[in-house]
Image (cartoon, rainbow over all chains, first blue to last red; front, side, top):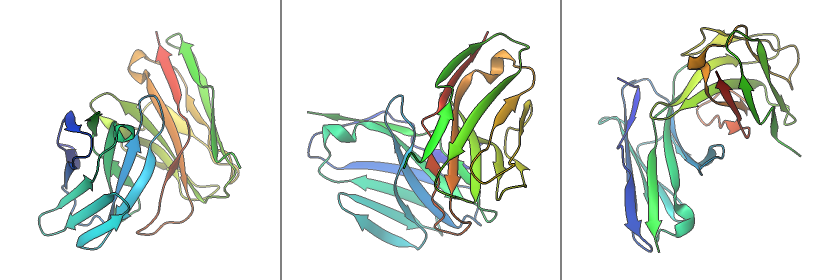
Length: 110
Length: 114
């Protein structure tokens, strides 16, 4: 079992809708959590990180963390075709190593 | 500022050959990392270096070696390539080790071992 699990997808949403991505992690000692976006054939790029319980908003993106449930999520509001990509969830361990989930592919339908 | 560069962009390699993937960063970041990305498995850490002169093993280190002679360069060597090492390899770097430590990724090297 991977340390970080993501809903397998693919996820297809209409333009303007909310895309909801989920992630669970097994290491309770994980310090913080990162969401990366990866376009096909490109390298991962950081969207945002979160390390406190609750919500963190950055533009159209909202990350949510629940450490008791070992659960992280990413909401993409007003989804655009340019949001079509694979989204990677990662957990930072106590020794500062990132463990990545396998990713969820999102397609936004125009 | 280029950030992180990797070379080559892609390579087809015969099994048993030795290959070095190059990674250079110009951000003066302390830590550097090598990952491989395989379909359905996500990114897996091969080796890392928290600072120049030190290296450590990640999740999947077998068959790979690294060195960190200076801050900027972190080459990954496959001593004798095998087909299971066919993958996309990403180098990454980060400035410091802390809870908001953000890793920045290079463009990747697509390696095919036949």
